[in-house]
Image (cartoon, rainbow, N blue to C red):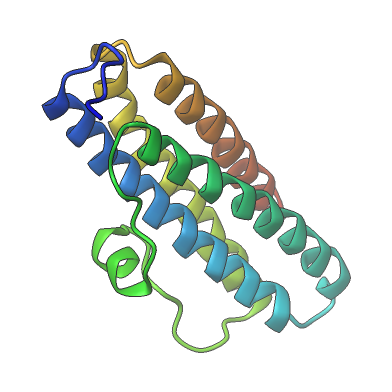
Length: 156
């Protein structure tokens, strides 16, 4: 059945493509965060282990919401590692970095998701796609706040 939500087919396709990049970035960051949760060591182990768990749990919920928005726009959500690697601006981590380097990598990852979300927000705003704007606003708030909190661990 044809979708008639007030956004034309071409714009819905563009929005879905942009959200697919947000999804790929978010899932890649989820995987990286979960990896770091498992492998962090050092004097900040307990703090980082618990913090990373909180972050990857939040990301797990976020990827579902993003994928469901893509589906609501009438397009399939990407769901394979190969597709995520193709679409993501975040690169996989090689090896097991130090705790400080994990934090730096996660700051960069959260900032990358924020940049991608901000790019898609412009298109969503132009299309008067309030649900996508709302989703992206929520994601921006989470990623910018998380990046700030992680950056604060690197000071001093």
